[in-house]
Image (cartoon, rainbow, N blue to C red; front, side):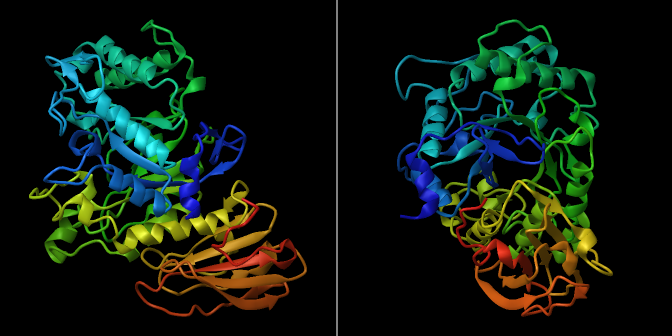
Length: 478
């Protein structure tokens, strides 16, 4: 059986922040690698059963689990009372503080939410779940004018899903300034109210008083695009457990800079890239669209975003495909390059290749990984040629990602032990090739198997005495 599918046979353990504040772990301390997929409108547009315009949502979960994804990023609703694919609206006559619940199965919007959560969990998948896409919430919306209604909605969610260990709650949803950002006091009050409601629903409290027990929740905030992070707005909020970054889909980007900024912030909180380089998308940067027109984001662009993120200190990465963002069904179209239904976009190269990053990280100790650009001697270049390095804190390994095969000399003494075993790891295939063994003295230059755009490689240097297997292969040490 595919090893990625084994997780679905067991109940999913709740997650928490690691002791060092850099990663997520299970309650018993096992490292968790966040490999996310993005389908913002799945809850609204997916079908429980096969339909004329799409197959049942089960196909999606089975496919993503087989590819090694661990987290699904999706929203419950926009700021409207729009019915889902089965004709059920989420709220009673548009009262956004009163979810519409009808007794019995398959009778309301929330039964479909339950089904999606059930089937995802059965396939070993966690959910980064947004209560609402908050950028759609106007300033005269009920949740802004009457924040107690935002609290009531949040409390409904917390109470209904209090026993779900596979939900990570994500507030926000773009929230662009100046009109709809959390810099607006009333909008920040709304976000805080919803977060408090979720926490109170889980713990059984029912008092909108600005206080909550945050020990039972794992929360973050999805920021607006353009190299922004939740840390810029909310880093010191008591409910914010980890930071999410949105570099935004474009061809020329330097997401490593965004992660490095969050890694340096105090107090220490985990960080990850939650939205960058959607595969098959047009660029969202106007200047690039003008010159590149309908050029589409390629797997290499996705890999750069992913490896730059993780090697710069991120605890994971979220992938996306433009056709999943609106969960396109047969006959539908959408903006920014979406051109075919979701079920025809499941097996793109970039989606297949994301598993190799997870396998690479899990084949070496994960919780002791730190950024290590100081081990690159000379210029590490800038995007798109930027090399980034990560190492084990005690010197058990050092990894260097090069997006174009150009790599500066490496400080070999960063690796412990009498001999260093060197490998090339291929991010396209997950294959590893042994280079040789060398003494950990001075610096050494390595020649990548290929150079130029789309010729990205990972140099892996191991302390030979650790006995690690080939990078990317299963290891007892995580």
